[in-house]
Length: 219
Image (cartoon, rainbow, N blue to C red; front, side):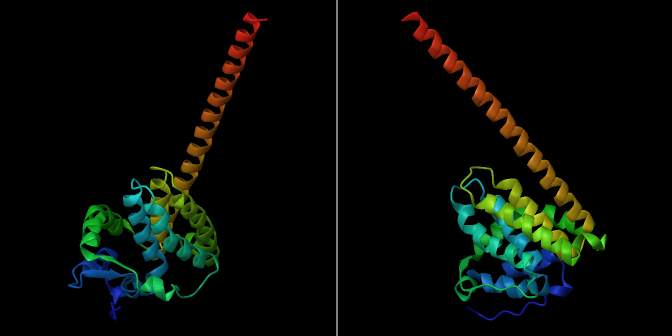
């Protein structure tokens, strides 16, 4: 794997993504991303893999593989590691840079829009304790992302990306929006489960009644 040295701290996140895509090397290594994002590694990689998983969510099985590095990142947020750690074999993994450019092109405009609005605020939302709680929640969200659920990985992936962007920018408002999104998602899942379970019980009761009726005809 080539040695990269991006000074990402002095550039907007979207510019870092563009600069990575502008390289001539046809392969993009995970180690390059880790080096490029520098001290913003945790939040930046949560954004990156969250967006990648959101885009890949309609493809069966893709989020199971792409969710693995995101899970490792979120777990390290829980245990409060100072520096992001990745196994050497993972750092040497790569994807075609052309595919990377196409993916970033799909999210560049909304990312730049959020980036312009974002700024450090509401420090308590990104405190050390808050980061641990966010790490726990994003770990659970990533486990959902990794499940083979068609289309069910989209919103959890976006929430992980939003949490990551809020941590990277130290923007408590973005983190608050992510929390509201997670709460809304949980309410939706609970309501859907209640509806499905009631419909299932009603259907089961109807079949039981039908069976009793048929049995009565022959008794």
